[in-house]
Image (cartoon, rainbow, N blue to C red):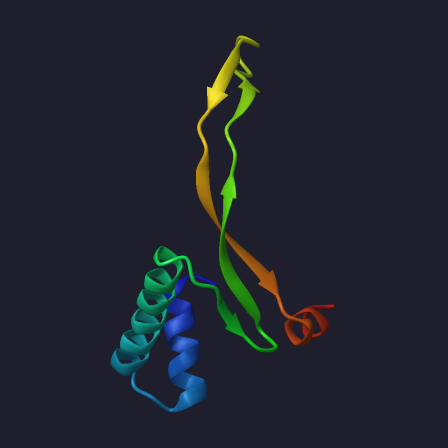
Amino acid sequence: MNKAELIDAIAENSKLTKVDSRKALDAFIKAVETALKKGDKVALIGFGSFSVSKRSARTGRNPRTGAAIKIAAKKMVRFKAGSELTSKVE
């Protein structure tokens, strides 16, 4: 499912217009981005939680040459599915 299909599904399930559904989805994404930038965790009970974790610097290998390369440390966005979402997917 891509963003356009998600907007269509939101509009159908909530009886909102597609324009309002797009605004709602964009507002949700923006709110999650803002919270994660501040280092906060976003938890949606039953659905899952978004958080930021740090990945330390490490040494990797260039697959073409086999030479060792340095991979810089960075922050990663993590999503952990909630129990209700997990049980509905199984």
